[in-house]
Image 1 (cartoon, helix red, strand yellow):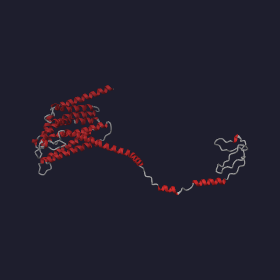
Image 2 (cartoon, rainbow, N blue to C red):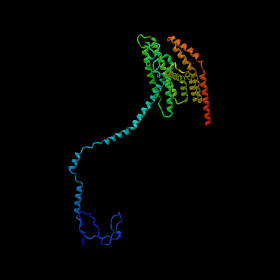
Image 3 (tube, helix red, strand yellow):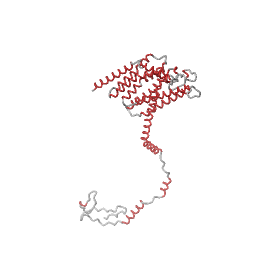
Image 4 (cartoon, rainbow, N blue to C red):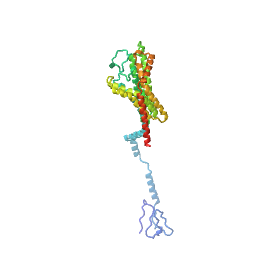
Length: 403
């Protein structure tokens, strides 16, 4: 029985028949080439020869089909299709990617802006808080001796500062306390995070400048400081008061510089020097609320001893080590003795209308009052020294007990 002729399209490899016995060694292992050993390979029976040309022709037809050029219809369809338009989602993704890339730069710029604005705002708020007591009663300018028109106290114009020769000490307290508050705030904040002192000082100076300009524009208009044919005393009054207030603003910057330091000594010195102006600042607020007629006597007694308490606590905090801090002790006790007398003499000299602006007579009168006021009351100096000594001793005992 003969096998059917092979299909030309089938695999050209011929399988051997099962009739001859095949040596087991001739069976190739899996994955190896089927090469029969010599003498053991069975010769296949005669088979009709496979037409190689048919296989070649079929392969050629297959190759031709696989490499055929595509027809014009798909190309035309592709050309007819519109260009791909980016969807809204892809545009949103691109925008989000751009925002993500710009995120760190934007955050850094925002941080720099905040680091500049926040300290400036701190200084401005401290300055505004300093002049607040003068605004509690409505912020009306005090009566002026040289006002060109007859005006009642309630009809005086608004002014941020109570410009008057009778309010010289009050003006000093209002400006200096803003500097002290700003400096102490900077020192406290520095214990937790860094803060630049210059923007704070800038905010302090800007608000003080605004208050001074606004107030003295009102004063200049009221006393006719620059009016033609006006009394020269108005110009001299305006100039003298403006010079004094500007000096107070510079003292406020000095107070800020001292109280914003990291070292204990300068801060204690700044706080102690501001003790007497602070008592005056508190008194101004009380008068603004109660009026002169309703000023409580107890407040006067408290404000008399308040500077001594502040100076004594500052000395106790300062301590005596290193030895250079003894200079702070001497300076603060001396200031507590001299500043009240200096304030009294200044108020007396500037408030004497009979002197009529005679600077030599005013200086002489002030010097006489200053000499007498020095020996009127030494009690606050003694109390401050005692508080400082007790405080230093208590700190030493506490330190030894913890060792």
